Length: 148
Image (cartoon, rainbow, N blue to C red):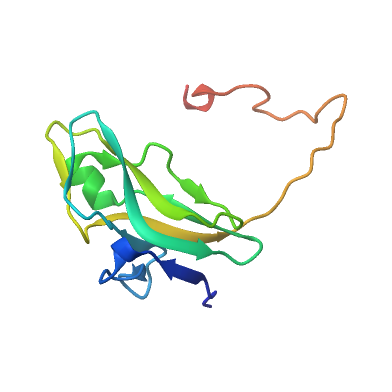
């Protein structure tokens, strides 16, 4: 199934590929860096990398921005707010916050695949305030309590 997403390319993304699935079974589409000059991210530093794309998601969907496993493994490049959420009503440029946890500077070149985007349905919640909750075997145990 394919869900159409309206997309506007900004001038600094001219000539770059649109987000695309690398394989038929891929869940995420690669997001491309629309930097005009290379951006060097030092060890322990972060940068906002532009994609040059604005989108209009259909109602009931979000676009999740996630890290690329190869960048994480080889260079220590992660997305500190992962997954980032692009809401259905956001119309600004998609930017990717990139954090270098590696020991060497990392250079983001124009056209580099910096993240992946996954389209996901959104289920909205409503709160129901109650006096007590049902009991479970876990109860209030958390933060590693099931691993003991």
